[in-house]
Length: 278
Image (cartoon, rainbow, N blue to C red):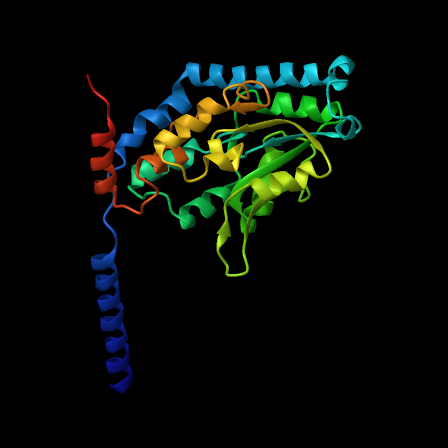
């Protein structure tokens, strides 16, 4: 009799916990505003054309750098340094649009739990043109560095995914992910990692989908300042800095929200107000 009462109590506790969990579970968010951007990346041939264009330009720039005539224009200390190319990972060489699509379908805005789970699947496909270009660069002796703000715990999954996608010469030494400082805070700026590469290699090209992939002058700047800095460095675009399109997410959107933590409803209101009309 006592055992029966005990198990009845356990059952009631389990039901109460389940009811509490359901009542406190976060309701799905409406992320439909992201649908056109995800569809553009997945279904638009124009997107693929832009990706091919970026990597075609990169090859032209790399081949030009290989010309001995151009080497004479370099500072003497750089002429004998080995060449390197720095690339971002997400939406630069790997396509994470399926993860974005799932977020829309489930109504779950970006969160680390889902992001880690997607990374562990190792299913991201390569961006059009990325494998061909980077493997060409490797074949002529250029070292590729994958500088990403994925977290260090994602390193092996990232390496595995890059290799399965077809990229050559990928390992722990050239996949440089986000670290933490002494207080345990994420160090998101990529400048120290770029400097680490630049200490031993001459960086021929930087490729990314976010302005922060190129220089810290763009980091956490408001929209107007990002425009100003972009214009100030106009001569770098398509030369040493090559941008891949990404309308799904990025610092460009965070800048609209002034880097504040907001609800989806608040973000929607700000986006509507940000639209420019005649």
